[in-house]
Image (cartoon, rainbow, N blue to C red; front, side, top):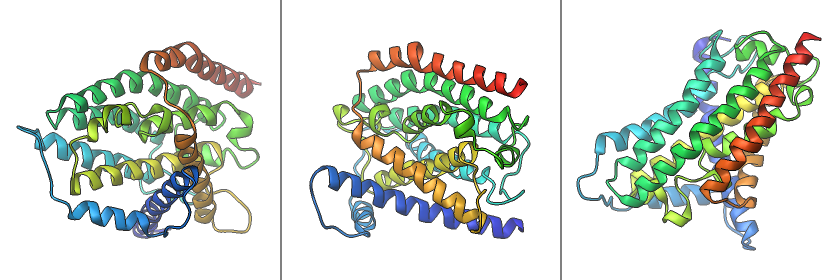
Length: 304
């Protein structure tokens, strides 16, 4: 597959994926609220209405960091999808250290969310930014443990090799603890549900409290791009990516990515958010030891 064709498929994958994610989010919200009806185009109508609204800004905002946070977040989601192989040896960014590149993207999310809260010059936005840093930094360690565990059978940090190593058995079966822990990280990276400490309702929107018009729509699109990129990485690392019978590889990847997205969106509506102190205790005392156990078991299996 040529580089140009791979890039076109990736762009279509990202665009359609964001639209489906927005539709699923709206569906789960309306279903849990007991509301019926609505259109599949409701998210597009809402986005168009938001863009047409007047932009309102605070006194002396940091406009450069505001723009950098939104555009950077969108770019990180695109990089996540770019390192995912769409077929045998077909990835927009084909690196032997693609897992390391994705880990760097995860870390930069913390920086960009903080900049998004810093930029408006608003107290509630800044509180949301500090809260996300407190939660985001330790939960990134989950990714380090579970992705290294997923890479051990392939003996490589290349996502292409990790997918190939799952031809006989998926990593989600080899390491049943890995995918649930990685999905928890996804809730944090996409600012959703129980791990949304940046834009939560108790802070009246947190880092996005002062967003309006195109800025608000841009931030929502950036979050959706991260959801698609993260889900594609999870599908490749744990569900075999493009591997599957009969259908083309990109179709299997799309189906598995959609499954991960649906799980994340459902959990974001079903799980309650803990106080920050309790969540920190859960991460350090429960989730990180479980992630380390997952890595230890994966290492023992790889040595056997």
